[in-house]
Length: 219
Image (cartoon, rainbow, N blue to C red):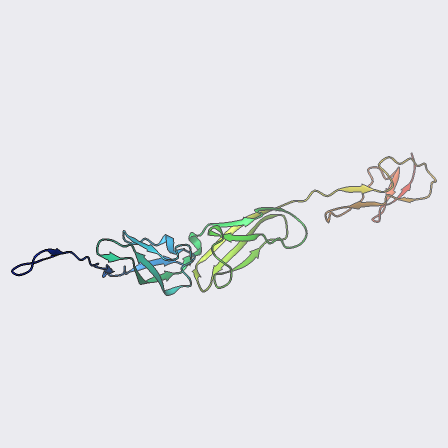
């Protein structure tokens, strides 16, 4: 306000604005993250937030990202470029989930799908996958080895269960024959890659060859 003195009287009031300036606060330093993390997992000082908190931090090495310090007092909201060191993820510390974790023998390789730490790690530039003992019934293994963005090794086991074969006899389960009848085939088959073998419980009554052909010998 301006008040008149001497030969001047009255008062004039005029308003003006003092604009806030950018915050001179130094950007946080010494920040580290692990490959596969999001920026939201990196703690910032009070008043700071990441511009894109849900974005992944990127590959191993040095990366930069924008963070914002909130407006306060004489300072306006201010963006800063922050440097982060991204470290390789250690596979031996990762949570590995297989799907399925239990399978049934098929005669072929069984290769469960792999998810690491909730699926945040893509296989490309991250790890290699190999399988061991994954055909026959028993305990099989998935072996993960780190590549560009991961280090170390992780082994996850899964189970291959024995399959129960199903036997079918085309000639029927109750067969009536007498001595002198023409030899006949059982027409047996087995599912799930089972192996058929034949054996007579009394060869004085009947014999059966390796092809499942029965010959009645007596009663």
